[in-house]
Image 1 (cartoon, rainbow, N blue to C red):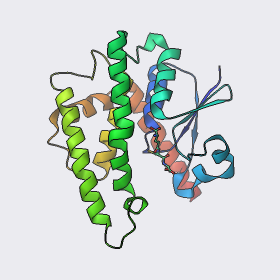
Image 2: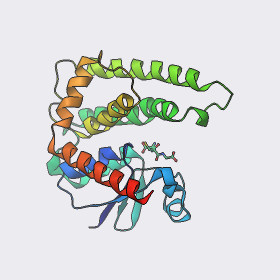
Image 3: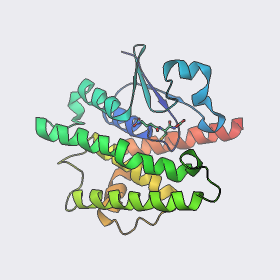
Length: 214
Ligand SMILES: N[C@@H](CCC(=O)N[C@@H](CS)C(=O)NCC(=O)O)C(=O)O
């Protein structure tokens, strides 16, 4: 089986990179330079008209959307236990990932690029402030879910990788997230995993490659 993951540094594509690594999968990461609009090239738009990462290609078949990608990885590598075994708990894990994608991610996107949602002159700060309020509301929910736990379930699962990305991205915008003690501890725990360290090293190498090509 040939697995390829279209990926870009800093983005949510790091979550499936982590879970593929946790699963011990052999895969090829295909980095795209978003700053150079490589995700909007005719070639990429042909396989993903949504011009987003992550995108998974398995033996030539294409799968978009983080949650679907995570479910595919979990099903394909069951020994990695990337989703809880109990059916109800599994659905709760899928619910958590859907929340990361549709409940948290949009506010990160607005913070990253306010003019994409409002191009009124002077609106930028207001968009960022409102987005960060929504982010804080969501991080508070995650903080409560993580109280007294190492991971969202009784061991590392795919939602941990997905949420890790949302928290990392929030922190990268300079938001003060130190009040979310359980999320902060989860973030540190995630950073200590070999899969995350591999991702971080890979991210650095891709960023260096992009900088050299600039
Ligand atoms: N709903 C998608 C969102 C993916 C997404 O928005 N990815 C961002 C990076 S974090 C992206 O590729 N942005 C490029 C663009 O919007 O053109 C998912 O959960 O996979």
